[in-house]
Image (cartoon, rainbow, N blue to C red; front, top):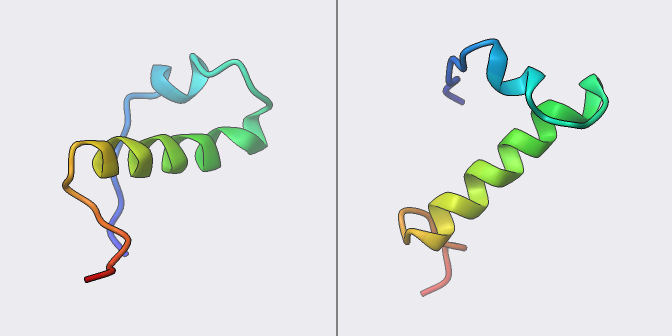
Length: 44
């Protein structure tokens, strides 16, 4: 799996407990990529 470097102020700006921030960023990235049709569910 690849990683993405985020500026430190991005996770800090999320109004959630620190342990919830990474899963939130992952989910939001996946939703955004799916919405823009860069990501699919893999169904044909």
